[in-house]
Length: 98
Image 1 (cartoon, rainbow, N blue to C red):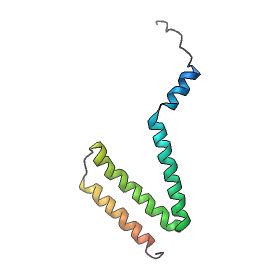
Image 2: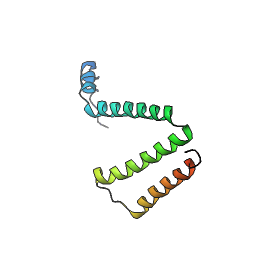
Image 3: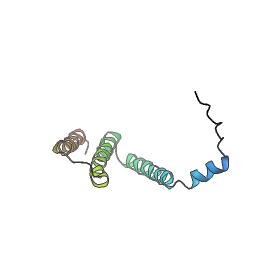
Image 4: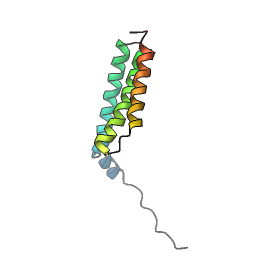
C-alpha cells in the first residue's frame, strides 16, 4: 500500500474567507430567517390548528411547482391530484374554525 502524503491542516483565515464569500449560505440563512418571522406572524394572528396545515400544505405545493419551473422536473397528473387532495384535506380540517 502506498503511503499518502500528510494532510494539510486547514488555515483559519481561509476558512473564514470561504464562509464570508459563500453567498448561497447567506441567501439561505436570510430566507430561513424571513420564513421564521412570517411563520411567527401567522401564528400570532391565526389559531395553530389553522396556520400549521395551511402553511405546510402551501410549502408542499410550492416545492412541487417550483421543482417543475426551476429544475424542469416532469409534472405528472398524480402530483397535481395529490396537491389538490392536500388542499381539500386542509380545507376540511379548517372548515369549522373559519
